[in-house]
Image 1 (cartoon, rainbow, N blue to C red):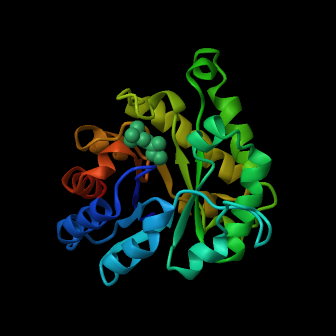
Image 2: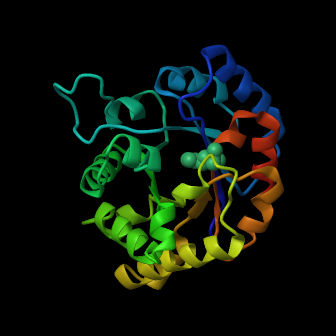
Length: 251
Ligand code: 13P
């Protein structure tokens, strides 16, 4: 049995006060929720404060990125060890905005996945195709390449620590959600890949989130699909009530 996992990616949003208000409003709304893993991923400067604010609640905290080296002369970067040190449990890696705005490649993302696991963070690995890739019939090929390369040399013991988030780039922040059938098709493909490259037992254990314009109105039909085990939520995670509704839709 896979436990659904709903995470909020706040991206580059909120002030310190707004971050605090958001989690303080969220805590009572999800307090009674069992059997769903819940995380929020605030911007770096607020991580520590959010970690302290959610302490004792069901909410865990993740970062939105990290560097692949342990430490050193990498001005402006943040290491996995630092994130672990301040109490993060998760780290989002390979988000489409990192790939397409900042030019992150799968080889870099693979190094980050290894480093995150090394320090005991749980990666949320994002994959997903561009609109032109979907229109050219390349969705399968693109997603398979992304998972193969970003999961290179990941052992079965490491793989069970990882969540995969399928986020079609054309659905992110656009209000255009993939249909449940379109999303299910790619989730199935990812699970089949895991089955072939690891085994069925492991494939059945891995949580695969959907991301891209997830809202309270569409969350349930998406997560009702057999291979959609949760959501990575952008815009709708910035409001406590809508994020809480999505969490409840995962039950
Ligand atoms: P939206 O939910 O705003 O489309 O963002 C999705 C996303 O990128 C989550 O990582």
